[in-house]
Length: 384
Image (cartoon, rainbow, N blue to C red; front, side, top):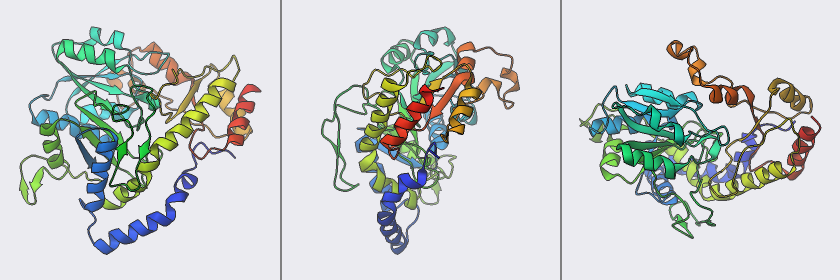
């Protein structure tokens, strides 16, 4: 069996070091908002070339807190409209609703699966205050065009980067150079991470390119005013214990998860490179007219969190792969506007979104996939 993602194999190399980290955390006796989180926030901010990183409980909370932070600062108000891609994972939309804001769905480009900048303008009204950009499957959206639209209409930009850890805006060759997680530098500071928005939300769910051993998330930003509010909001709205400035929540990246992320962060670029290598093989060697391969310009703008193909007869192709002991996953079978949770949207028509959700199939791709396994997947696909 070739599993879709073998998390045990992904995390096994860190086992001994993690046991040491766990003992260190236990010996310190400090489990929340401690030294490991401080190290990770500094390291991840430097990795992303941003001033601030705020560790939170999960990627969903990261998005919600960004919206609530902007509401607290008066830059958003409850009831404001937020533009969001129609084909995103439902968490992006739920976060908007959780903050008492209104999602406005926009179709993606069929070529990239990311939001179509050409369709954003027609959805902007006097109530539109922000664009939530989702870098789906690990590929950056067209941020230059989206930024122009935002500038012209005085809109905030928030990025859902839950699937795009390490994706770069150009093809410069950046490498992570660090001997320990508290001293993170890039060989070329311009190569990655210029903050294209007010804030980015990251998820460290175990299956992500940078995943922990449970739920975890973070927000990065260069906005000192927003960062100050977010550090408080994640901790009951408190900057000083028992003194509450805001109506906050409890959403903190704990010491154990932060310690594990500190071990894995130095290897993120190398892991992403392995994913890109597999993607190049898939793109070069899968030759079957029944299979539509994803678009990639071979720059650093894609970290291949997922390698997503399309086919007219998805059920047949998935069955063929299953019969050959290759596990696949559908990301995602039902578009948000067709979910039972949103009956008011069920009659809406988003044909490109619906086509994507009806045809996509995700192939195995991970840093621990062997060359022979990749070759076998390619062979089985070509025989379909």
